[in-house]
Image 1 (cartoon, rainbow, N blue to C red):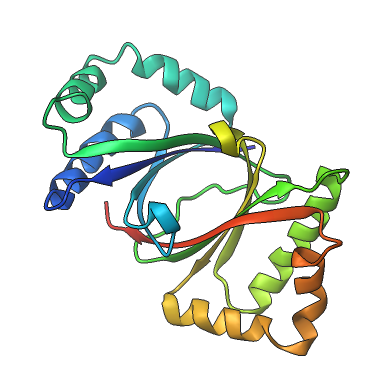
Image 2 (cartoon, rainbow, N blue to C red):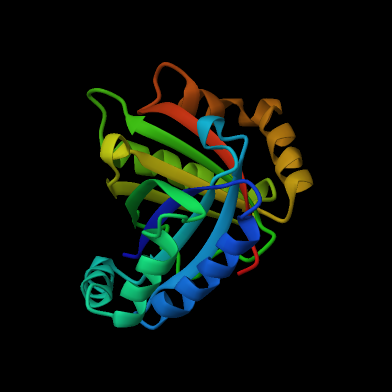
Length: 219
């Protein structure tokens, strides 16, 4: 199963264009080691609003491990880190980093296209419940999201992520904010209330703790 390595950055005011240029340089270096790279800006994300998320997709965790080791000896990457990340006047600060694994039936081969509006919903497993219950519910959402206008749905579990480790992360892609708004409006219809209750009611196998939106940027 594929994995997503995600870093989130707080960019200093006035230096976003510089950061995007640096991200494009990093993308070229990471792609040499098998990553598929995208960049997103987070909105409606609480304390993380405005952060830029740099994502690297790998075919499996072994590919991620090989790339991570190879980057440690890649002189071009090490020079980039020294010049762009570790410099005293670096234009951005690393806020968080996580490694997330695709769940069965949600393998994601391609990165999201620029301009895609993204909804991300994060949850912890409720006490006494099982991952099997969660995956059954996730597949119900996959079918519903397609019916309601989402372009795609991904479902991952955070392998490494500090306090967010072992959380489940659902992400949905939309053509734009208007498509997302139509999706939310349809979820309020009576026919969808069973799914909403199963997901957010007292019998849910999940404890939801975060929702955020974002937009994929050209890179």
